[in-house]
Length: 189
Image (cartoon, rainbow, N blue to C red):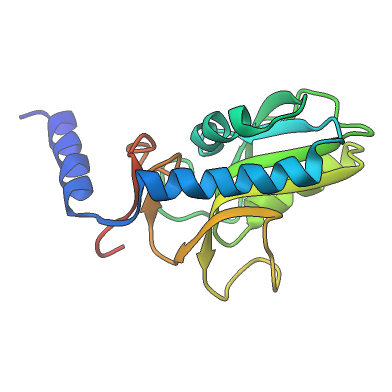
């Protein structure tokens, strides 16, 4: 057995042993609630939407078709994690915002608000680039008391879940299982 086969076996076993915190229908209902709130708040603002790669890809794909107003879509990629299971203090910009945010209302779509360092860096960058307003939408807000700023919240949140290592619907475990149909927590992490 090769090292890659062993690693993939571990990835499969981890998924089989994980706890399902929100099944597919529960996540889809949360996304629909987010879309309804965004439709009310941003329908008249001509927003520019940035999907945060790679985590925000799945949420963006499920959320944007439910928004019933014209918008522009782009992406950016900033990370503190890579394929690690814990972030470090260094923000890595893999793809800077390429669309002009000056004078625009911007919506940032990401998978999870954990401590919030990445979301703060992204929203601060977009404001520095001249955005009039910057809103954030996250699928999951982890419930804990160690946010980067006291009381940090996204403008639109799908689910509040325990402070565990999560994967599925865009969140990954070592680069895998972003495609899981539900949100799962890794055992013992």
